[in-house]
Image 1 (tube, rainbow over the protein chains, first blue to last red):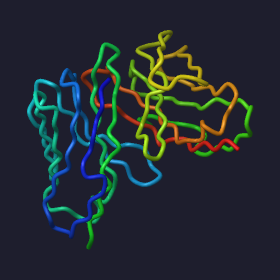
Image 2: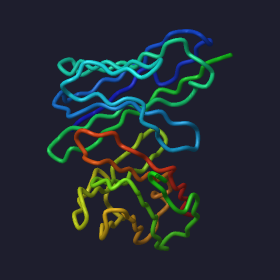
Image 3: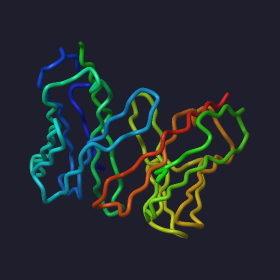
Image 4: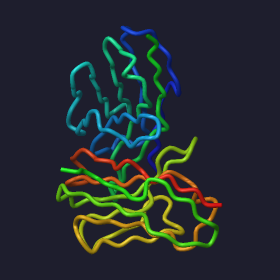
Length: 112
Length: 113
């Protein structure tokens, strides 16, 4: 059974700092990996999608990398802003049923 | 496009009552799914559908029914509500499951007393 772990569970940084969020998964036979953002009381917003054949994806100040063989992904946020404060979720598609398995998330607070 | 819409936003039920959570998407997506989100448990897949007329169970299907009569709609039915079904429910859709971005609705917060 696929398991996804995100470390740390919570992170607090001053504005302007660069930061890295970590995601690991137990079964490397994935179809893709997605990073989502969730604001309190809201739904999930997709940030980046990395196909299994790709190594990284970039969108603005966000860069996500994927190392399938080691079962790891990182989300790099450059020059963090208070508006980046949210919970960041990592999810992978795997298995014969191609189910999406989520990590528990990292709650990020960017202090002004 | 409205994207993925869910109704109602909030609902309070008594134990034993039944209800249907509505989900609709206007992006012509084939794949739709339902998740529940609980503190400390993350999001867990309840049921999913790969197209009209085709549904299957996810990780936590007990106590829930689904049907998919059209591409646009994917309702989730609670047959006899229990306090353990108190949760936030999210509907999601994508063009295909294995290669495309998942789009999520805003969620329904359900409390079962």
